[in-house]
Image (cartoon, rainbow, N blue to C red):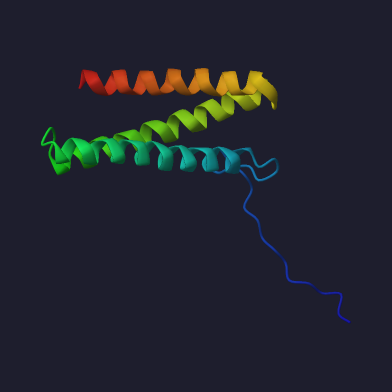
Length: 115
C-alpha cells in the first residue's frame, strides 16, 4: 500500500475570502440566502396582488421584489453576525436577531426612500 497521497493546496485566507476554520462566513452566507428567499417571497406575493389591482406595473413589482431580497439578505446576515457575537442561544439571541434585523431593514428602506 502506498503512503503517497495527493497534495491538497489551499489558498491562505485573506480579507477577501471567508475563513473556513469556524464556519462563521458560511453560516452568514446561509442566513443571507435564507433571508433573501423569504424577503423576496413575501414581497413577490404582495406585489402580485398589487399588479392584479393595477396599483403598480410588472417592472415596478420586480424592482420592489429585488429590493426586498437585498434588504432581507443584508438584514439577516448582519443580524446573524450581531447575535453570534453576543449570544449563541436562547431568547437573547432571538431578541438580538430581531432588533438588528429590524434596524438594518429600516436603515436600508429609509435610504432607498430618499432616492
